[in-house]
Length: 200
Image (cartoon, rainbow, N blue to C red; front, side, top):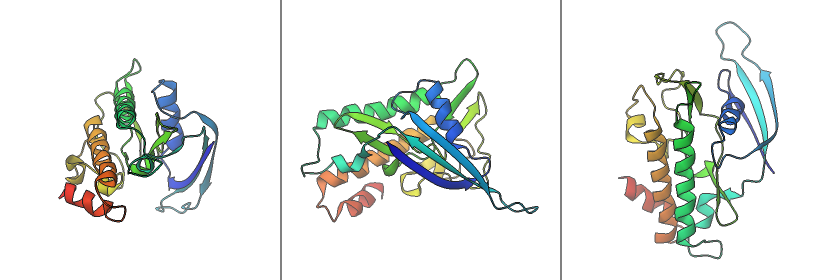
């Protein structure tokens, strides 16, 4: 099993978003075994309130970058294609508007949130920046201007576009793939530099 705990602003609900995509039967989202939340601080008027959320999930394996490269952990290219196709399927399926007129966006697709168990089972974890929207509701209603991991943000997000869409998650996924490929194309101590050149 895998355990995660994090502090977040009140109103950001990773557990709720994670449970939403599970209920939708979105593929490649790990099952939740146990959850807990606590409130802490920020009780004075005008102060930001915080809360902690803990999630115990099924085993999700290791980060996707660990299976790239030329060492013994590397997996066949065909498996890599299938794994990333699985990530695409997850993001698109979550963003489909359901009968309840709701859909979800992850909004933080990054190296550490894309996992793989064994040699072929992908998982997308960490829905803490995610949000459940209703149809035609796209405006970002967060006090933070940029939501996600900066190095993997797409052009629209970096330009602080007021709306988020699944295309932004998919662009982040493409950037993660480019970064992963740099592990195979560059010496082990130079892959981050190689990725920066790709983004330049």
